[in-house]
Length: 342
Length: 136
Image (cartoon, rainbow over all chains, first blue to last red; front, top):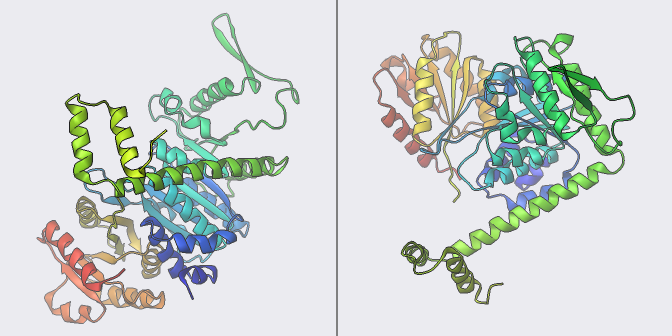
């Protein structure tokens, strides 16, 4: 039995070992064997600034899906220290309620240092959980940078989590992270300022989806007017709903907002699954993925064929203004590919 | 470049709530370039074994200050073995009398670090334990 066979047979130890190999980028043959078994799980990305309660929310979502009888795989990503290469992965602390439940598998991952590598390994890890038969895969990541955005972009449904009182609301806009949201979650909604956070998010959405609501400046006051029902958009446009949650409450407590969040995720899923949206988006994701893998592979091959001192000599030439950076790159390409670069 | 980080689980079994030591160790191992899965206080043997399994760690580090190590360690080893983790070594931090060392070694305890242990030394010993185990 290969490792992939053991994973398909339901071995949790094999799954854990496979995830390690995936993280070390040592599992191409296993991933190839598992790929035909993927495509069944619904993958949900959860991102947002530190302190918004992502781990608690993921924990609550897992509880809610377990209550529906669905199995849940979780990938929780924390940052690697750029100075030491080490990491403290602490997301499990908020997820200990699922200990002992064979329907839940939680794996912590560090971002490590690679260029765009994390989005590759997180995607592969999600596929491993998918192939292992989990119905729902939750990927939790710190929404701090481009690589995190790339990860959640591979999800079917992406939740962007905000919380009141985390400082400048404009930060969220600057980070561009709202644009990837399929569902906006205002967690810690029992805290003061939640209404304000919701209002800011709604105003943001208005910029992207002007038809959702209309704001009018009137005698120095902003009036917000709902567009008439049924007239706002064509069905192909998904307007991210804003859901308020208190992830630390029991999931059957309506004040937790969890039933509403689950409904919003289901609505997004229905939206994608009707009218061929899902196939279109998956195709788009695969195109991005192939581009990304090709780029990484070509880069790796190129660097493998390029002696370090040759590279250093080129840097010297560029630094001393003998050649320009563009020419240096062309030199490398013509050297390693043996042909004239385009 | 692919770096293969050593993965360490740091857990506090039992009921004592003094987690300063565990946090200091977690931090120092991070600074030594390891990936530390920190699970926090009041972990049951089952929770520890399951986390060790899912996270595929190289070493399980336990902080025990309550004096219950002769109860907790055998139980944790038992559950870990039941999870097919017999090959994963345990290291201990906390207040562990010398008299118990030999007995603990029987349960796969590969290192014991009491008060005054240097964090560099702990990291180095973990590296040796992992290297000695020769795990791929």
